[in-house]
Length: 90
Image: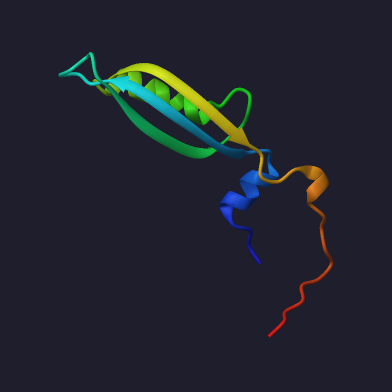
């Protein structure tokens, strides 16, 4: 049985990361727009978020203003136990 890719990433230390990105509209720089980004990433370096923000700053017109980050590891080593079998209830 193959593991789900997201579950495997959680076992490797990835956690769900949410970033609220406030940016200035190119045509109306006094206005702020909000963008919500969510992905599995590794704290505290957040390589996926950094890659996305690098792409944003080089390829998109909206100037970044504020970034708020929330991160939660969904599976911790103390919570995960390997089992020897699988049981099904009908």
